[in-house]
Image (cartoon, rainbow over all chains, first blue to last red; front, side):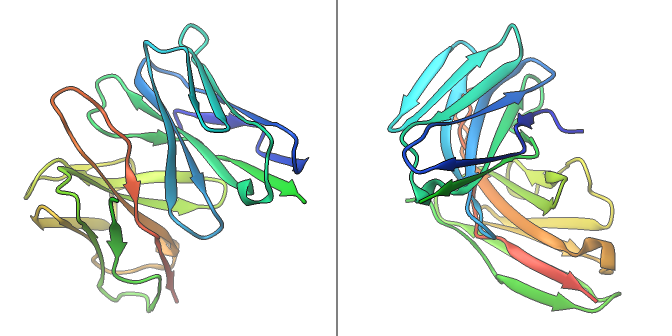
Length: 112
Length: 115
């Protein structure tokens, strides 16, 4: 079963706009991670936020984590055409060893 | 930079064939993983390994086996390929440092078609 569920499943925006996607999960976690996948390629790690952190930034990316609601959000500011990709959240659940459980992903299209 | 390589980008095999997918990482990571990715189903964990000669079943191990004889190499084996194993296969690795957890580094993927 999928631990993380992303919302929306797909998102289309104009270049320069912000893109926000959400992830909900079910069990307690060590950390939550966001990955990007360009079409037909492997995943690239974007950001890791630990369970005791509430917000984290990396360049144009901002991730929030609310463990009480078991949810996270990824914000991409000032989007570019190169941000077109699928974005996945993955949870490192307590007691699950070093395994990650991935959500189904959000497909983001940034139109020039 | 961490590099995870997979032996093939595209592979076409016939039903019943034995298939080997190889994955090599160059950063001395302890943990290695095999996933398959299918439209609408996301990434699903097949097997993972914490150390040489160790393996653990993931969520969908049926029809697969793995081998880890060396730390840098993790092989996925389809004993008798079937059409429902047509998929994108992704290998990943990560480090371990006590109880600290780290991100996974992925290879480019192997798109396997079983006819």
